[in-house]
Length: 405
Ligand SMILES: Cc1ncc(COP(=O)(O)O)c(C=O)c1O
Image 1 (tube, helix red, strand yellow):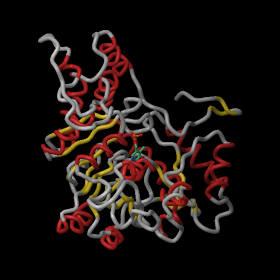
Image 2 (tube, rainbow, N blue to C red):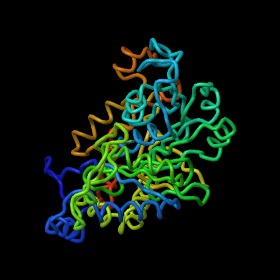
Image 3 (spheres, protein in one colour):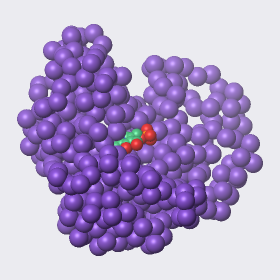
Image 4 (cartoon, rainbow, N blue to C red):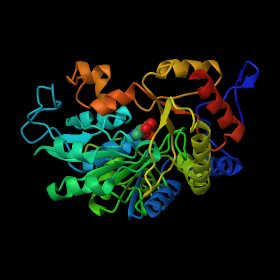
């Protein structure tokens, strides 16, 4: 394993992408092809991701954030019929007017940011204490007549309780967007992530289960939504560059909507396709490492792991633990001890609604999502990536044990 030297032992990074000769060859082929931006490789990735998800359509994007934004815009989420832009539950001036999108705060801020970019209002609902996924009962209480969508993240790769979430949303005709940034290849009750809501978004960011450096994908069974998202992903143009400059000669194009620049290049798509070939093996190795962590940390009573439900197949994106109240070190103390031992760590996540912007500009306050808030003080993520050796996991577990003794 590659690593940066720290004292006697090599540093164990929080994450290291697994990139092999096949990945390099796939990118090189595109570099030598004379066509670098979105074309055949991106289209192939769209087909493969749709197939993996058990749905009909994929739209390749340059990030998961872009895919989430496109999903919201394509669903018509906006400032509301009688409102200006902006607004926020619990604080914004347009809170009575804007469309609302419900999401849990134990997620990456981009999911909430894109709600704001639509001129809509993020409404945060609390999480389940065992998985840190959206609590369907809290969701039911958060829905209003202004709710236009729900974003359910599959936190750490463990699918949210989508059947219960859908049971709350479907009768009200509220579409559910799966934030599957952590969960490519996961399943819930035998059904693939990506097919569990109206639309889903994957991430191919550098630390994700498969990567293209930066990249994302929207998948859906809804043909009209896919067509709208595709159009908006490239400026709202009627023809993408591949079609404008094809051998058939130049063709005029029209702008039919104020779209975005969210397309994925073929260089990145080629890398993601090559990585996708290894997804099952990557996720199986992640699972093996997670089970090793479970065994090694079972008697470290000051650490509390997350629950994995029997009816899900996780993508094992993160190994998240919580430091118990009353432990000799708190979360930040344990992170400092692990850092000093040459071990990379992460925090997923401090609740979005308590970040300064969300508090100061939008009026969110502590107390709105108590489970998420208590958890946000105690969570940390240990290194987890397919290139880790068993000895690395053993070293991380031993460092946790020593620090918390
Ligand atoms: C849960 C979640 N959603 C969305 C994103 C955004 O992904 P991207 O960086 O591809 O935009 C991330 C990124 O870390 C994430 O963790």
